[in-house]
Length: 242
Length: 304
Image (tube, rainbow over all chains, first blue to last red; front, side, top):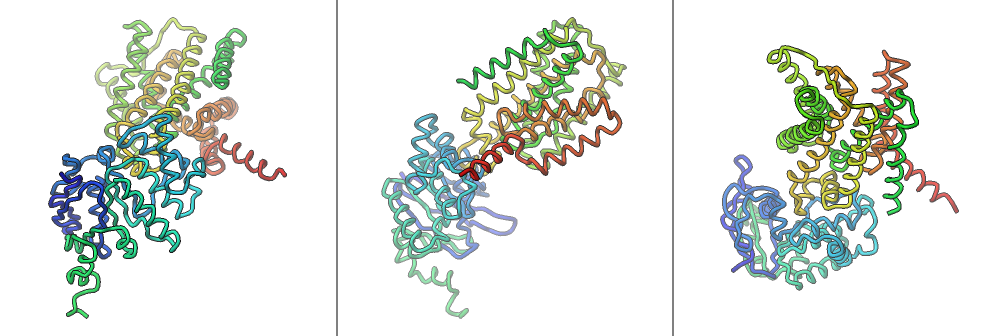
């Protein structure tokens, strides 16, 4: 049985079909890139899976349970964690407290020493281990991104949704980021990553799905998907238009 | 451990104060304890979540009115219990309908609530019972009231200390920073806010109930005075609403200041209230205790 089965998921905003009858399945432990031009509905699709938005129709089955339209916190506790395209940290809390939240309230619901251990491990993994007591509001942008990933990891999720987490990194940081995600993927977490950086997609994702105008227009092995004429047309326009 | 011992010693010392002070001074102590309890109970919910509630007097007045209505028919402990239950029920009702609101909408709703409760009770008294105003005759001395109020102070601060160390405290702080992140971390927003709001409002109701015998004569205009809500907010903010001792640190000087002003400048004193409000928000947005910390950090840094 697949870990995640998105079945004809749709979301309308008035007359706009932001996500239009999207279906795909993911096996546990796999990683998939989610591509598409700006405004094609990638983030909306992630929002439907994480519960930030309820689908207008369709099912989102996770571990055999239909989570479509469930409350965000219930979906988080079911084992889905995410990062946000525009970084969201809790500025008045320390790094450790930021990361402790999902460890305490999330999937595994730890408290006391165990929560502390999980949170510190997540900070170590993202290179923030020595700043656990600092206030999150004092971090620079890149470290805020690390903190967001650490927070998602401390949830010990089965499914991790990364929304352009690699965007805005410099080349060195990008290599580090790719290594980090690759190690996560190796540890058995299932990952969907929305990403525009092709270098990262090629390095990390054996499988890619492409969205355009709310529809899933391609889904398969990465190099095949990227050479698919309809994908090229979605990004670059049709030959007739040129 | 040492902090707990100091707090308990201070509580014991405060408990014997009535043996050494005059009736007037004891009255002051009761007023002070009332506001420390109100500000601490208010901050229990609003301090971390940053939901600024102006409904304090809705609950406070309800507590006082419960005693006014029931004091002749039921024994005092049962009356207090009823006040607590009514406060909790009202908080649940209000919480369920308002905690989806955020920011300014919540503030306005809670302010409106206090007026609504006052008008409802006035309407009920005038049209159904045919009287406006009730008497409270209870066989309670000022000392009894003082001790009960002191107990409420201890409960409010004790509960806050416990919540700060618990999962609930962490959840409330996360909610104060970003509700979206809190929910994505697995926190049940509605349940968490409702729980804290109900504890806070129940304590506020009890403060009103315990304080009510001091008035002897009670009517809606007296017990639902919106100044109580504003004072509670600025006291908690002055000390630092997200600190355990912040509301106490803010409530004591402001209570004494307003007591002095209302005696010496009875007509112009609301002006000072307004000025204080503005000053607190501009000069000490995070409260006195945070101000002290900043100062200490600054001096610590300049030292060689």
